[in-house]
Amino acid sequence: DFWRGFGVYLFFGLNTAIYSYIGQMFCFLVPGQGTAIVLANIFIGLNNAYSGFIASPALLTKNFFFAVQYYFVPGHYVYQGMVTSLFDADYSRNVTILEESIYFDQLCVSDPCTVFVNDYFQAFFDGMWSYATNNKDLGILVLWSVCI
Image (cartoon, rainbow, N blue to C red; front, side, top):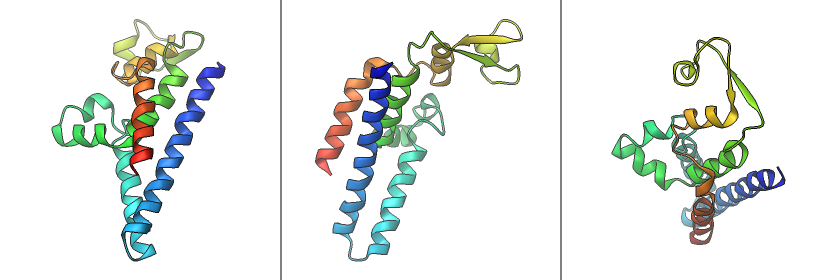
């Protein structure tokens, strides 16, 4: 459990650093502070929209335009690292799935339905996110931090 918490803290810290570096970069590149703030907010908005939390990774990777942004923005790697650190291979907690849920048919046999957190996690991210990719995610985020 310590390492799961540490992973979340590490990815959150890298996310905060990247946002800070992006803001500083725009302050350096454009003449006005207002313009820099707008550009940084646009970047953060794109980062959130294409990170895989608002729309599922499976949906984003079906379209080339969305897939390019999904793999480019650092938020994808931040959220993937945070979420996999918390929920991947978690067989100690359960989730109750309601019959109205879009995951009911995929995960449940009868109502009421209770599954492990890991099963729900895999269904939500279509099996595309895994704790095994955390080292790659860390490397990409450190590269982002260094390049900015």
